[in-house]
Length: 133
Length: 431
Image (cartoon, rainbow over all chains, first blue to last red):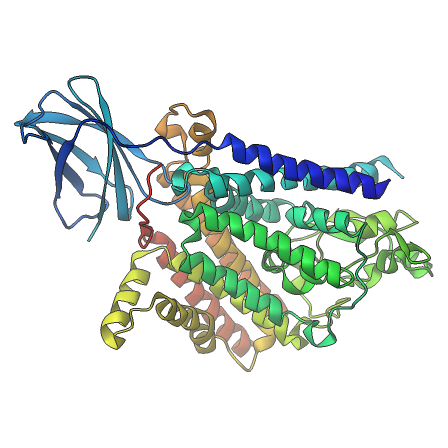
């Protein structure tokens, strides 16, 4: 009886893994029809925890023309479990340039996930990384 | 069987099944979920919640995580089919292999940045299951728990500071016992009906929580209902260097003393590796010796913390006071893990619900967490200083050890006051 119960348990574990694997869908492809040229910079380069950092993003289309009426939503985070991300949005300045100010909560390697909504409504995801000096 | 005992034994099985189910989910999420650590529940639950809850439970109750161990649940289930016949080799009946594995896990954590690596974290869980199963299906009793399991060694030492202990209710009942089921178990021929203590702790001579997995096998086996979970004064078992069943005198067990040192200084190292000076030290090593191999750089830091530093600050003449490291050592782990747990306690909610969640509710603010961390450290420091006072009457010895603990306390304060820095974690991943 015990042996049957244990065998059933292990079959259940095996089935559990099988169905769990099916439930994980691969992430959606990031390729979009629109080619977007993203340039970015930040200052100051010497960052401490109390230093607000200004990030600047420049958007151009494939023809090199500035994109002015886009929306850039930002999730700033680190590759560390339990990390509380920083959410913000970059404001349009001029000539395809957008800017935002973030006070970092930790030093080290940061990733900014950008969700860019173009004037035609299309959404493009980009990520940029930087390391505090 | 009285109701209390019944609830205790059934809750053990229930917790083991729950943790087994949870382990399966964590393995699946780690292997097939997002490989970006902050968006993966495996890295989050293992490195933030599990570790944090483990130390809090050890502090306020006892070694109940060992009691709920899913590895042992699977092992016990498989022992229905395969009965081990061999005894764990006599030469390995000590903590040296456990110490090596404890260091190996600490090293792997830093080398592979496990906190930011969901797949590796899942493989670590699988490796634990595999090791426990292979060892305990080959060797009798609980060889894996007692001699090898790194989490077990951590829990054994930490639980010396716990307020709960599995103890005999009345030693006079034990004195009249002639069958010793608590140690031998109950057998019918070769068939084990009830297990006795698999870590070789004989209840009347058992002193404290060291090497006790809280498995409750002795509670189940005792025909006199004379064993229960009872309240004790934390650290009381360290006040005297008395003989312990299955261990002997702590001061005569160099393997246990070495484990205490690795536990204490490993805690300091684990916290140090997360702050800026660790990266600066590595950079300095690179410049000075032109070493660019991460394995060698990390080995250097490990030797520095686990060998050089202890040799520098521990009095060799009074080494029998090494157990007085336990309160401050545990406090360092507690302080470090409570930081991660409290600052990211609800970060799992948006991952589970896939909905936005107010950022200010995801964790406890730093201005609240820092005093808690320092409070734990101070408590551990006072505990270690008090232990020195109790364990030795000579002023010179006391002064020597008080200086050692003060130095360790100051180093821990310095490390925990520094901001965390995450480096070496970029792997080109997106959520």
